[in-house]
Length: 85
Image (cartoon, rainbow, N blue to C red):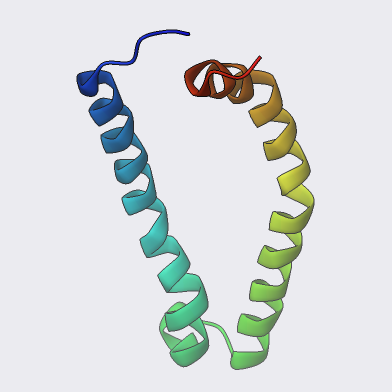
């Protein structure tokens, strides 16, 4: 089992936190502000609903590729870190 130092765990946690902090404002804009203020985005309320539905469909079908990428690139290091074979 590889030895994980506190420093490398802290760096990985910091990297994950930074990525999440960059993604969350986009979700807030899409799911909270766009339906409440569609005119600020230059669209109607109906168009806002269509865009949110399209976004959801892209995410549902896109998760397949995210899952494959995770299985290929991220799962082996994660398993090694957890001590699994």
